[in-house]
Length: 183
Image (cartoon, rainbow, N blue to C red):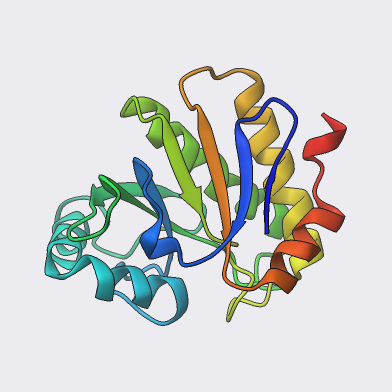
């Protein structure tokens, strides 16, 4: 399954995010930045020790208490086909005092801003917070697609925003609930 949305800059694919040949992969990280399960663990395993070392340096110099929810930082991609990894921490659904949507949107917006700052042309996102963080996929599709559309409306640097889903059924949920086609 692959779908490109109007304007041709947003693409939905089903596959392994660690195999995406883009300028930057987005890691759905935990605040420790030291690896974990799901996408986070897969990116750290596939990218090798260079990513962990870069994350340790960010913890030492910028975020000693951990990366706050909604923020994003950039590191090397190590052994991955991408040039960089952008790490962002999504909200744990229901624990943000009613600010879940704002915090999830911030993950996408701040990651896209980092890509723009580094003059990147392509970026690949996983479905942030929809795994163990429990964000409902239909709601996440609306929030993420709206955040991406708003960013792309004022940015010409990024040529491709790839949304990578591990399973076809997850991609189908995004197709049904996204707001990209409405912009």
